[in-house]
Amino acid sequence: MEWLTAPFEVAFVQRALWAGILVSAICALAGTWVVLRGMAFLGDAMSHGLLPGVAAAALLGGNLLVGAVVSAAVMTAGVTALGRTPRLTQDTGIGLLFVGMLSLGVIIVSRSQSFAVDLTGFLFGDVLAVRESDLVLLGAALLLALLLSMLSHRAFLALAFDERKARTLGLRPGLAHAVLLGLLALAIVASFHIVGTLLVLGLLIAPPAAALPWARNVPGVMVLAAAFGAAATFGGLLLSWHLSTAAGATVSALAVSLFFLSRLASGFRHRRHARRAGLHAHAAGFHSHAPTTRPNEM
Image 1 (cartoon, helix red, strand yellow):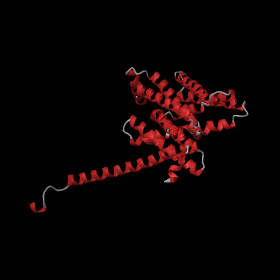
Image 2 (cartoon, rainbow, N blue to C red; image 1 turned 45 degrees about the vertical axis):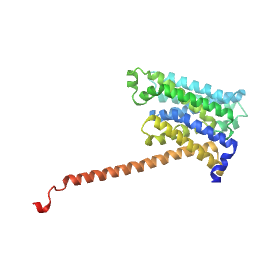
Image 3 (cartoon, rainbow, N blue to C red; image 1 turned 90 degrees about the horizontal axis):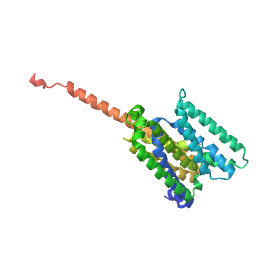
Image 4 (cartoon, one colour; image 1 turned 180 degrees about the vertical axis):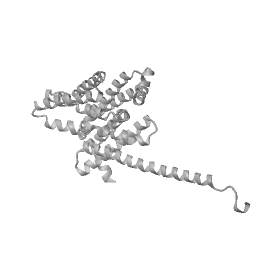
């Protein structure tokens, strides 16, 4: 039991655990819609698009979080604007922004000789360096994400399953898409300090995808995804402590592993139900063809 509890008796690991739980909840709110709408590439592009703002903030001695917010705002505005451009598919516009922002970030990084350590933390996260002030910011981000999700739930739902119906119902799908991009940007900015931009999809995509086969509605997916993310955080920090591995990468890898385990268990459950249904159908067919009179009554 000491092996299980000893790491979490240390203050900075406790803060890391709470940070991971808060980020898991934020990512569950945004990631569920990302999974339902098949927007994983957009999430990847936006996470890498934070590099210019973070690099510029580091070069100027500013706050990295502020730089990330500015870059996220630019990416959100850019994706929204290019999505309205005729004869240009959304994937093409996202790809162009992805490469452009990443290139700009590398150029800015090349101007600084002291950004190597900061860049490593940016790419792979530094969850063990979370401070109490970071937890306050994450708590505020979670409240904002909850507010956006509650106010826009109906519009997001219609947008995810039938955009034309959303327009018919007067739900303004263009505005709903922009708000969803803002929610996604909020989740990525909140997460990059925990798992880094290269691994942010581990908490943004894997837990909702793992929860999808087990939940009957969207709120259920969100709750279960938050639980999967929290479990990945706890297990990742535990393994990282005992195996001396990178904490953020271990958390992300465990989240992806939970996805594969969930899919495996879901496949077993589906085959078992199919087998039972086949047995019931066979039994029903047997009874329907059974003779209704006894031999001695003939």
